[in-house]
Image 1 (cartoon, helix red, strand yellow):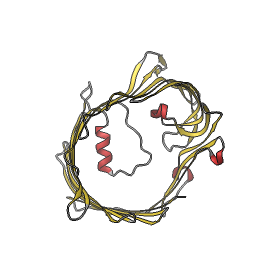
Image 2: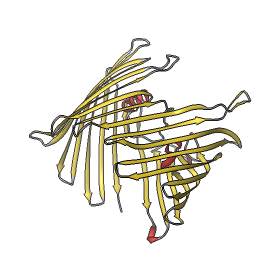
Image 3: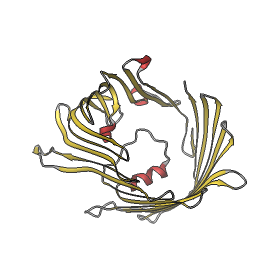
Image 4: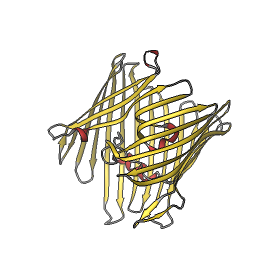
Length: 383
């Protein structure tokens, strides 16, 4: 439920999630995650309201080969997103050979779209040596649009433990096809590069670094509010560095920074954030976190300060959370300044072993005397 000076609306969301592995001791497995959303008193169509994020059946021919039919994300080529159609994989020792044939979801409503055909193959190597786990995938994919070549690219993904406490993840794509003004170009172009390193110095200190030039990710559904989504979008690309420290058994802190730049000097951003967490606040036995975030972009500067308190009220039955944020936006065009006070609270109630209820409220009060509130209730039943 959203309440504001402009409009009040109430949205219903139904979700069904089911996973079954080797059903009834057979060779069949399944994975499903489907949602249906609509706003009360508004017209609704099945195409707009229904979202099928996963709907697949897997058949194991033996321990080393399988065939999957339906919509599913392949973890070995995960950045491609969901694949609609057939996925076959065969193992040879530490190697896995795979092939895909089908289509991509529609870009606008995530429905099945057989005009967006795609097919490809990949080879993957998995090493399970103690203390030196590594998996590498190399693939080639052809994507179509209305029967014509839309994209042709090579995909690479690698994850490994380079040394004790040092982990590496990297992926990139190299495009091999481009058509502009009816002129085809097959020159190789590096796209969607991402590299991440994580190092645990000891039990108290950890550092991480990454470089990201991937295109922005499209979220068809997200529980993040506008501020969190905005910061994520503005800091996703570029260099990022983070450090965290566990000062005592109950106190930890961390600092993260990122910078985005382009050769054209367009759309730069700088971000600095930090937090301090107290895992056990004296007298009230709760968890508290203080956060600060400073963001500079080409069109605004923002400062955000927040505090969050979590507490288990009745052990195993009832837990709650309250938080507050002070937000300051300064737009560089027009020198417009916006101040916001944001407060929220939530309760998580475990009614029975497999039945729980979640209640959430957030209110936004800004310097223009406008008020925006939202209330969310969630019922979860597990079987």
